[in-house]
Image 1 (cartoon, helix red, strand yellow):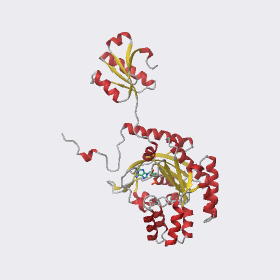
Image 2 (tube, protein in one colour):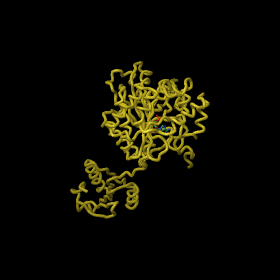
Image 3 (cartoon, helix red, strand yellow):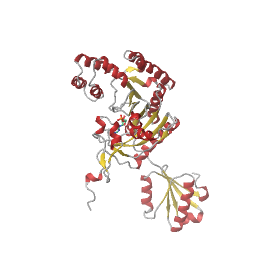
Image 4 (cartoon, helix red, strand yellow):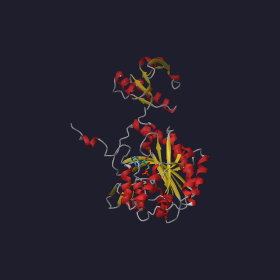
Length: 421
Ligand code: AMP
C-alpha cells in the first residue's frame, strides 16, 4: 500500500513535529523559564490561539499584518491565529480593568506567523515572555531587562548581549536631522541594518527622503554600539528627560548587576510599530538572529481598553534560544521495563509496577508480544535503566532478575527489597 504521498508525510511548511525527545527538550526549557518567571512574581496566562482578525490587525504594523494566518470560520467570522501574546494580553486587560496594577504576567506558548521559512524562522513557534502592565518607572524597565537576561542564563547561555535603544529618542534624533514625514520608512530601513549591506541601507535612507549628509550622519550614528553608561549623556543631547530616564535605568540595572550586558545600539528599532520608548533585542553567542526582543508600548493597552496604561514586555523565541544554548534532542530515561515470562508472573509484574510507580519511578510492563531478546533490544533503544525479568523460578524464590542496562550486569533482588535500587 502506498500510504500518504511524500509531501503529505511532512508537517505543513514552516512547522515542526516535536517527537518526544525534542518535546522533552522544549519542556525542560519551559520548566526553567516558568520557574524563573514565578520567582519574580509573574503569573502564567494562556489565551485562545484564535482571535478576531480585527483585534490582531489593530496592533499589527504593516509588516506583521501580512504575516497573520487569516481565515473565516463556518459562521463567517473573520479570524486569525495570534502572532504574539502582547495583543491577546492587551485584549484580556481591556475587559479586566480592575486587575491590580502593576500586572505581572508571563506566557510560554505557541504563536503563528506566515513568514518566509528559513533557518531559525518558523511559521509555528514557541514564545516565552512577560508583560509588565501599569508602571512607567525605569525600575520596571530594569526588571524586564533583568528577567530577560536571567532567562537567557537559565538555559545555560553565558555569552549574550542586550542591544538597547529608545524609540522616543530616535524621534528626536531624526527630527534633529530634519527627517520628518517619512520617519516610519526610515525606521524600517534602520531595522534592516546587519541584514542588508550598508550601501543598500544608505540607498534605502535616501529613498525614504533623507538627504545625503543626514543619511551619512545617521549611518555613522548607528555604526557602532556604545557602552550603556554613555546613554544618559548621549541621549541628553537630544532630550534631557530621556537622558535622565536612562541615568535612573542604569542605576536600577546596577542593582541587578546587569549593566555590563547592555549596549546602546541606535540601529535597534524593531519592526512592530507600537513601541513608544525603550526597545531592545538579545543576541546570544555566535547565533546570528535575535533570540528575543521587547520594549515599552505605553499606548497599546489604550488602543484596546480605552484607558491609558503604560506597559512593557519581552518575548523570547524558544527555538532560537534552544539552538543558541545547544539544547536539542533529549534522552528520556525509563526506570524499569518489566518482562513477565508467564501469566502468573504478569499478575505480579503489574503489582510490582504499581508499587514502583507509587515510589515515583517510571515503569512499563511488557505486553507479551515480544520475545525476551526483542524486548531487551527495545529496552536498549528506549533508554531503559533496569530490565526486570520475572519467571516461574523467580516467583518460587520470591525474587526478580534485574539487568542493569547501563552497566550491563545482572543480579537478583528479593521482591520486598525492590524499589531500593
Ligand atoms: P518579535 O517580537 O517579532 O521580535 O519576536 C520575538 C522573538 O521571537 C524574536 O526575537 C525571535 O527570537 C522569535 N521569533 C520571531 N519570529 C520568529 C519566527 N518566524 N520563527 C522563530 N522565532 C521567531
